[in-house]
Length: 376
Ligand code: GDP
Ligand code: MN
Image (tube, rainbow, N blue to C red; front, side, top):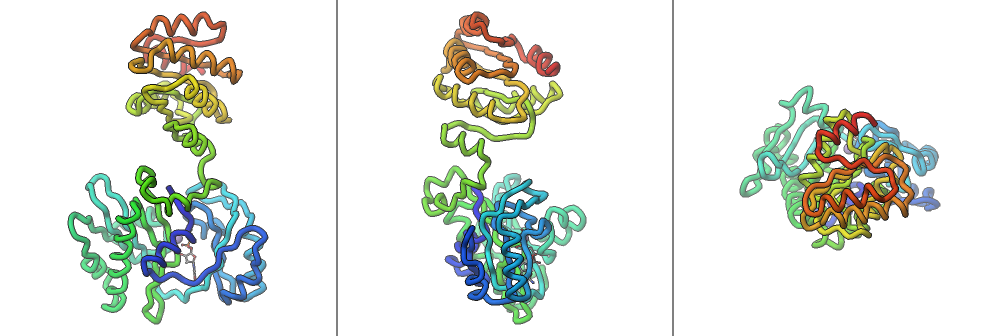
């Protein structure tokens, strides 16, 4: 789960990490009053779940009161188009005291699955797109893989900053590590972590992602969820108890089992198409669940066809066929539906579909499925 910058900064504050004073403003909020309180110069920041807001015009420095009011009104309500997250409407802005920047650093703690540990990453090239730095000058990114104890100081020293600054950065890293472990975060990123002429170290950006599977332990974090920022299809799927991930292709798929779902997406790719989604209806899907799944699939405006690939084990094929037949009737599904069933009561399942009076393409194996999907 992602949260907003202002929420991440509130957590930073709780853990004793320096952030600039700021006020959050939503629609119709007293922008003028907030600007007066924060003072100028200030920075107006769009609060959307996206990086690279600066480049997209969602982060602007205002020198005086008048320009701060003007910029705030421009950013609040704007459609922010970023390279990372597409178009997002800005419903909230953060009005923040400007910091006199001497250096911009990059600092993050993140899961490193290949090394099975948390990676601590630092760079002097903060403020930039870190993926870009990694591409053109990987030697400028310093990484430590935390295996047992976390001793950030050694890596911090590689930046060759003053002793005072290095100690401050190490302390911040320790606090962030504590935050990451205690709240089950999968990523904490500060880009940029700013050093001022007075040798203060301040987080002027803040990003935290949390492990969805651990959210049940953290009501405080769960309450930070902003439903407006979530993908509407995925949000609906969560409510329906479906394992669903939205993707960019045109072939909707409905599968039981995560492994089979992955393999099905490969099959779609082999047919020269792309999956519109990942959907695992699970082992014991009820016909109600199948209908909900269908509803979700056909609400996708890019959809060209639905491919159902089911292995009938606990979920019998005839039961599935009934569910699919009913869903298609009730929802008046118009697009082609291709069904491949294998396992318990496969024949009965195929009979139900073939005698339904509806248009189904029942295929016996995956090669046939590829052939049919290719022609869509
Ligand atoms: P992002 O583009 O979404 O990563 O948003 P950031 O919060 O990182 O802001 C983008 C850039 O705006 C930063 O890299 C800074 O260069 C600049 N910026 C943000 N806050 C301040 C500030 O308080 N003072 C100054 N001078 N620049 C700032
Ligand atoms: Mn940033």
